[in-house]
Image (cartoon, rainbow, N blue to C red):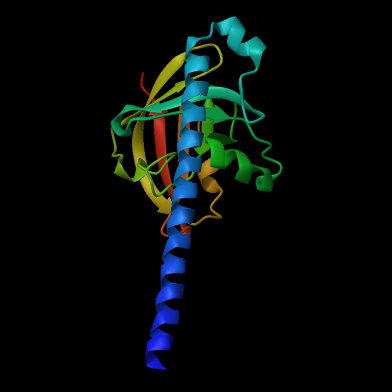
Length: 197
């Protein structure tokens, strides 16, 4: 009787392991495909002329690309997608694809532009931002192909409901706020950067 119970337990264990491995493989394949699409969009955006970029309305899965973000210290380069900030539920889909404009004006506009991205375990999206330090550079390229460098001056964690991070304190400077989840989605990791003059 014990041998039969062990066999059943062993079979269930093997099936569970195969199932988990299958889920991991599927997730990794989806992540690989997403990264491939992002790099294709980055190349199209980077290689198009200013007029082409504005007229083509470059998109990723139906979401308009409004710029590029590059952080050399962590080898990050993604398109920035536009979303409807009046509907936070809408952010869930484009944020699975790339970095999104969460709040603020145009890319490289004056004031505070807030960008959000997932903190993926495999290091994609904003998964490596925890490795950044004060003084690191964030580069944003807008639809006019203007690239502006921003230097990180503050890094902190805050409550997910803290909207003060979105406020523009000085409309005469260019600032970018990077937002990602941390600590099991119980907090937000915030990185603030200002234009290098």
